[in-house]
Image (cartoon, helix red, strand yellow):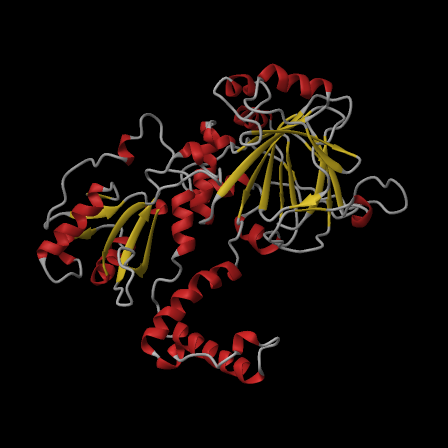
Length: 464
C-alpha cells in the first residue's frame, strides 16, 4: 500500500520559517505505464494517486509530488530522452530557436546563448560543459517514439493538445528564472536530480507566461529534490524555478503540458459567435441597427447596456433549450494540430482502407474514435447570407507528427462534410458500439451506403 502524503512542514527545519514539504512516497511497485487505454495510461502515470482523488484535490488547485523508488521505472524514464540522444538528433538537422534553445539563468535573468543556423553537437556540448548552459529541446515527441506514444494517449484523455519540452541542466546550474506558465504541467525526472522551489501563484490559472522577480515572490511554499522516476504536477500560474544541485551529475527532465487556452472562457468565446449568428437569422431584433453614434460614445449608455443584457438573456434561453453540437473552431483546431494515432511500422492502417467494403446489409463500427470530432457549421464553400449548415467530420489520422506543436508550421485539415440531414445517422454511428447500415436514420438506401462508404474511405469505420 502507498504511504500517506507527509504533512506540510514534516521535514527537517532549516531556519525560523521552513517551507512546506510536498511529498508522496510511492511504496511497492514495480510501476509501469499502462497503454491499454487513455484512462489507463493516466492512472498509471499518477499512481499511486487515484484519478478521482487527483481531479478532486489537485487539478487546477495545488501541486503534487510523487517520489518513486523503482529502478525499473527510472530506467524506463531515462529511455524517454537522455543527454546522449542529442548527438543523433543534431545529425538530423536541428535549428537553434526552432528545435533547441541554449540558456542560463544569471542574476535572475534568462541569458540566451543560441548560435545562428544549425545546431552542431560538439558546440552544444561545449556550451553545456564550459558555460554551464541548460539545453532545452522543443517537442521531442516529434522524434522520440515513446513520448509520441505517451502524449498521443494523453491528448485522447484530456481532449486537449499535449506538448513537451526536455531540459538538460549541468550540475550547479539553473536554466530559467522564476516564472509561471499558462499550461497544466506534468514533470517526469529522467536523469539525475532537480531541486525545485514552488511559490503561490500571483495569478491563479494564468492565461499567459510571465517571469517573476525573485525579490517579489518571497519564500517558496514548497521545496524538494525530484529524483529519477519521480513525477511533479502543478497548475498553470504556479511560480517555480529549478536548478541542478552542485557536485552531482547533470539533470534531465521532460515537461509535459496541456490545457493551454482550454478554459470555459475560451469555450464561451468559441460557441457564442455561432449562437449569435443562428439567433440573428431568426430574430429580427438581433438584426436591427445600433443607435446612431453609439460607436463614438466614450462610455456605453445605460440604454445600450440594458439592450445587450436582454440579448444575452435571450441567448441563454436559446442555449438551455438546445442539444445542438456546440463549438466549431476549438474542436477543429484541436483535431488539426494534435498527434496522429501511435503506430509501429508504416501506418498503412491510417491512410489505406482495409477489410470488407461496407454495404447496406453490413454492420459497421467507428474506429479511432478518440481521433475524430463531429461538428456543425456553415457551408464553407459559400459566402452568401443563405449559407446552409453542414455536418463536418474532422480527424487526425493523417496529421504530421514532425510538426506537432511547432506553432508556425502549416497544418492541414482532414475530414468530410455532409448535409445537415445526415447528423442523426452520424450520431448513431458515434454512439453505437456497432450498427447495421440499414438502420441508419436516412431516407434512402443510397444515402446510407454513400455515408458509410465515405467514412470507410477515410479509414474511420470498419465492417464487423
